Amino acid sequence: MPDPRFFQGLAPRSVGELSGLIGGEVVRGGDRLIHGVAPVAGAGPVEVTFLSDRRLAPALAESRAGCAVVRPEAVEAVPPGMAAVVSRSPQAWWAAAANLLVRPIALDELIDPREACEDDSVVVEPGVVIGAGARIGRGTRVGANTVIGPGVQIGRDCQIGPNVSLAFALVGDAVKLSAGVRIGEAGFGAAASDTGPVDVPQLGRAIIQDRVTIGANSCVDRGAFDDTVVGEGTKIDNLVMVAHNARIGRNCLMAAFTGVSGSVVVGDGVMFGGRAGVGDHITIGAGARIAAGGGVLQNVPAGETWSGYPAKPLRQFLREAVWLSKQASVKGRGKPDE
Image (cartoon, rainbow, N blue to C red):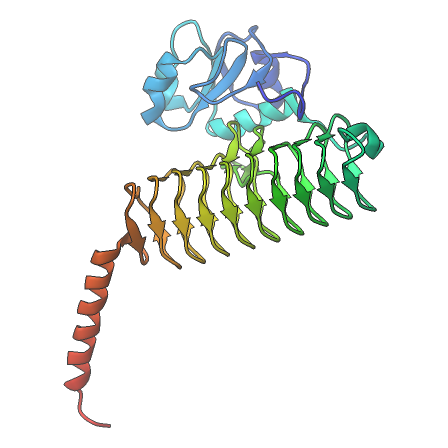
């Protein structure tokens, strides 16, 4: 279930009631009570999951979910004993169910900064807004006009710049966040439906571990259901984007304009040059280097340096660049003078 510091569980509803509100056809188990939502692998007996890709059918067969929402042609993939709902847009159905069963805790209640601070060594500059349940460790300084959402936990000896926003986040010790950093905003997730794309609720957290530095106006989204994690000692430049469910290892370096897509796994000690980009669900091995402007569209082995678009091992990229330059020179010499 989502972290109760950040999300509130609403009243459970039966599968039939949910289908009556959302749509879809109940195949079986209409009276089963559902308390929440979860992806296939992590769903429990009181949660609903969805199957939008038949390739995940083996995972559904092993799931403990109480209910599955599937396309009409995949109904046979729902194991016996699991409630089943048929929908042409299973993920959109699941997203609608999430909104009926789980609600993010809103910043409705503000607290006096002294309630959130561990001791008098914490400095809170003018204009800071702090939500209920937030905590700030000793020796931390929070810059002017920063917004700290409900339940957010900030460690000791941190430096939080002005106009920062933190929500759905756990922040370690000695973390430095420059002006305008956004931690824990909703990740970009949309599901197709008959009426157009619908937002998929983002029910995870953003975890910033000890000694991380994040530059001005960079963003780290919270997870869609799992957590987004930035590992210890990682240094992130200005204007960097880390999308939902990404896991950045320890002691990584990310130069300005780097973009890491959803569910990317980055090993320890990886370095990104400026304006590097990584496609979703890609793994980059420990100690790898991505050159400036590189566009990574496949897994990168540990310790290798890749460059270009699409990115490839550096020596291969350089050989191809030299060959292309020679071909262009030869063809250029063959043209008549103008």
